[in-house]
Amino acid sequence: MTTYIIAELQNAQSSRKGETVQAANLTAAKRKASSLQMFQGTVMEIAAENGSVLSRKQDGKWIDSL
Image 1 (spheres, helix red, strand yellow):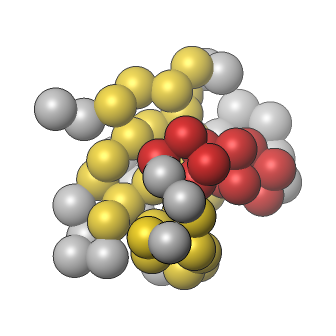
Image 2 (cartoon, one colour):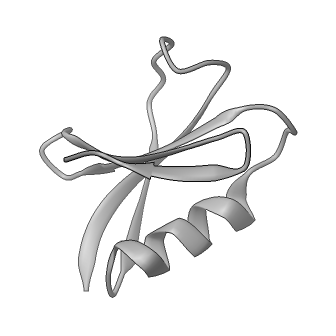
């Protein structure tokens, strides 16, 4: 299991302390983040333990960082 940090943001430029979750892989972390999303129209962000952003969900689509 890998540790990911999931945060729900008002927009892509904002920052907020995230919730730490354990997931088997990035796909599982995306599912978990989608289920944790409380508000429609917000940006979901998944980061690694070191804080580097791995993926963002904006307008209903996941965009992976390269």
